[in-house]
Image (cartoon, rainbow, N blue to C red; front, side):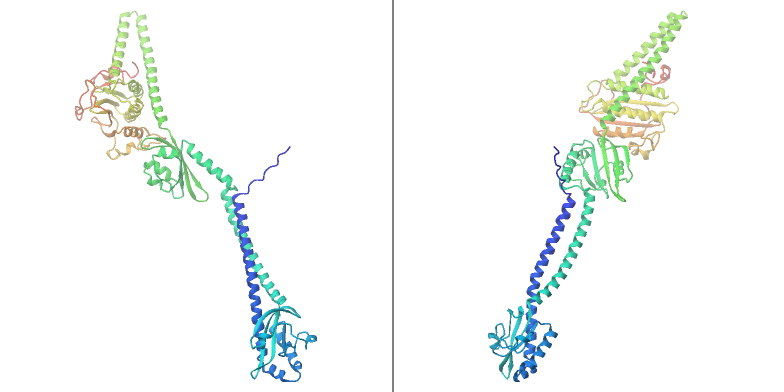
Length: 576
């Protein structure tokens, strides 16, 4: 059995059109009815006034008085009454004696008969009007006396039939109906045009569908974790969801405010104010790394912008850790390669019959590698940072840069509080080292010096390089996204590392500065407050470093001979 399909509810535009059409029709019909009743009364009153004017004119005529005095008044008065009737538009003019006997009548056969109507008031000298049914049917008539020398010598009655009044009223009503119909048609056309635009705006949906879409819209906005920001044509906030408020760090009433007044970082504000679409752009706020996509809403003109915000802060941190682990893996691979080379050397010495030299060579290499590895681990007891330094050393060595850990570097167990995770330290130190290696690569005697220690109540991470240095005019600009020491206008997404470093340091209420290194190049220094002042044994107090000299250090890039001229012991970049 086929279930009958219920009719689809009329769209909101259709309902409005029907309601307005009915409203206009009711208004026009009500006005027409009111006008008909009003005009009918006015028509009867006008007919009474016209009849009274005609009756008085006839009664005041000297020729009428003179004719009444004659023996045969009808002979003179009948033609006169007919002429007056024809020229004034009344239906009858009846002249009679005081007794009510007619001297004139539109129907000559009724002359000499008694007048049908009231005459008592006229005989008392009073003029009046009334509606009465006579020989011509219902009529509006006026009756007035004819005075001659102070006495009433006759009566005059002039009248207009109700049929004539109705005919006049029908003409007026017909005209009114035409005007009303025109108004109804004009109103219907205007309503149709307005509602056609409304249908386009609502896509033909009815009120129920619009209400359902609104509910879905609100639920979706609150359910989506990504940030959604909608701007109008004047770049004011038209809509923002909970995710957008959280990612942008804005609170209170922001709808209606300009994006420029939200206190966002300048690059992010510029991206939102741009009329060009932005695709997967990375921007930093005070505490987050956001991927921003914008798309203009246009229809012949700029109507607004839709922006989506995706939080990749955790992803960036994990990427930094992955890079650290990858670097450590590469270091292990390089060490395995070096170990294979040394093993071949030992085997060759044995094959040449120089067993003692082979034992001395193997023992010396093993002791040197173990001693230096133990020294690094002892200085930096945080395993993640130790692995980071070993991995960065191998990478720097492959790029022809020597990585040195200063002798005063020391981070003991328990120094780092739980609020300062190793992930954030990897972000800070790893990006500073990468930036320094980029700067020192290609320079003569390229070298990067790393210091990690506690000075008073602060953790100090200092990275110096022997590159070209940083122009003092750019000391603030270097931390802007898109800038790097290798290319001042870094293309292809470069220059994010220093911006991430500053973001992380600020999140822990620390400071990040850049200055010139004593031996040339740049020196970046991050100072992060520690909960308590804990100074590791053997760590010199702050301020012991002499100006103009670089602290002697432990080399992490290069072979044994590469560090022979410097204080400390060299760690081969390719071997452990």
